[in-house]
Image (cartoon, rainbow, N blue to C red; front, side):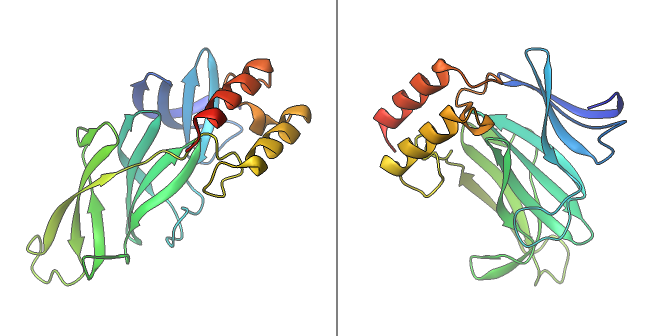
Length: 199
């Protein structure tokens, strides 16, 4: 990854230290995680967000709970509220989305707005002709995906088991089920436990 040329917004969590930065080899602003002496690039913050917005800008107000990082990204082209689950960003709400029958203009949150999987945020709507007159406070519950749903088709079934086995025997990084940076027997047993628990 090269040497870091900038580091900002450190956030300690039980999963490691999350921070944003750039390196001599990764010149795009990115979200990183330092855990067990290993630095992992989690997310490219200069690419396209997962929803309808065309570009990230300057993510602000990171929060963490139960293995999920959330952040608000604000820019001239709008704002978005995102959750990073299993090192992938998911759009929760973005400028232009319809909420309670109104078009969202901007979204904001704050660092202490997270309680477990519940996140508070406020929204300004596009019909707000007098600034800060048409706003509302919302609370969203962020539900982590089911660990046993290995292929992401929203259910835990035999296909997940066989897909995991294929990845495991191919030594594919996606079979690193417990996130210890290698594919070992423990990943298989951890997956079996999750699969047995179901969704």
